[in-house]
Structures are given as structure tokens and as C-alpha cells.
Image (tube, rainbow, N blue to C red; front, side, top):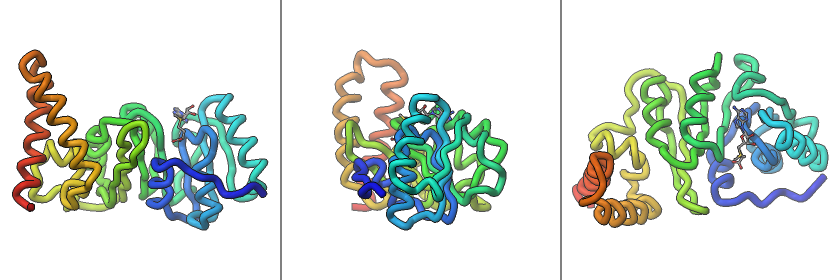
Length: 227
Ligand SMILES: C[S@@+](CC[C@H](N)C(=O)[O-])C[C@H]1O[C@@H](n2cnc3c(N)ncnc32)[C@H](O)[C@@H]1O
């Protein structure tokens, strides 16, 4: 068996939010996350799904070399296509654009009750989808890397998601209700960065820049009310 893998901060954050008897990692590529989920004892079994031939071969080689082929099954296919209804308790989709993740979620015939999503940007797309589809945002974090990656953990629940109560809605969708409430250090740095960038663009930018700047200002104003 090979030594445990060292994950980057992004996948390490996903790992620490994941715990299930059987988990699916969709878009697995190198299969680093499935290997770490088994090696860390956070999952009993993982189904690793990959669409493309090259990454699929990479995943199969990594799993074979690890000696964990009895606990990690690599399947080729599109999104949740290779997963049977009820087969897994949770799933992760990491390192993809938010709109690609959205399209995979919307095309799924069945979704597990727990989702850990790591879009490269535009997390508001997935927070909005979850609100409309009955998934509550249980936890969220930002991982430092090439840029600040959002990691979102959703659980299927009835009723309105209490995470958004009494928050400015667009700002909470864009920046994250839990990150706002706990004054996350990465979020504060990101708000300052975006405030500077958008203020600079304000006079030449269009309506989009103005709306984005307003959302940043709403987040900063709300933070002042709790400081
Ligand atoms: C950028 S890699 C991310 C790999 C890994 N999840 C990570 O976060 O490091 C995205 C992977 O998702 C795969 N992928 C893209 N669309 C997919 C789909 N619809 N179903 C399954 N895999 C997909 C790509 O082939 C690629 O290997």
C-alpha cells in the first residue's frame, strides 16, 4: 500500500467536511480525494466517477497502486449517471466551475442527502440552487490556493434554510451566510479586495459593476452591525 497522500488546502477542507459509509466523488481525476477519504477512515467505501478517458486511467492507476481497490471503485460516466439511487450517502464535486456543477446536479435522476461542493468561483449559483431544491447549507469554508476556493456542505432538509435568516440576501448568497456570521478572516480579506477592485472600476464599469459593489457594501455594512 502507498503512503497517505498530502492533499492541497482545497481538498483537505473537502476531506474534513466529508464523512459517510459510502461516498461518491464525481469528477475524481487523480482520485486523490477518494484515497484520502479511505486512508483517513472518514469513509468505508468510495465510488469515484470520471467522464474522460485520460483522468479515468489516472484514477484507476492511483487506486490500484494504493492497494485500496477493494474499497474504491472507479466508474466511467457523466455526473451521477453511474450511481444507483440510494447507493451513496454523500457526494463531492470539486475543482469544477459552478455552472458545470449546477448542470450535473440538475441532470441527476437522484441525489444523495449530503453534498460537498467546491466550485472554483460563483458559489452564489450553488447556494441559490440549494435554497430552491431543499438543501440547507450546513457548513462552509474558504481554502487558500491559486485563489480563495469556497467549499460548501449541503444537507437535504425541509423548510427554509435558517442560515440566511436576518442577513442581506444577495450578500449572503454571494459571500456565504456562515462565513459572514463568523467574520471569516479569508472572507474579510476577499471583501476588502473586491471593494478596492470594484471601486476602481465604478466610473467606467456598467450596471454589473455597480450591483456587485452594492453587494460588497451590503456585506461590509452588515459586518459593522455585529462588530
Ligand atoms: C479539474 S478536475 C478536478 C479533479 C478533482 N475533483 C479535484 O478537485 O482536484 C475536474 C474533473 O472532472 C471531470 N468531469 C468534468 N465533467 C464531468 C462530468 N459531467 N462527469 C464526471 N466527471 C466530469 C473532468 O474530466 C476532470 O477530470
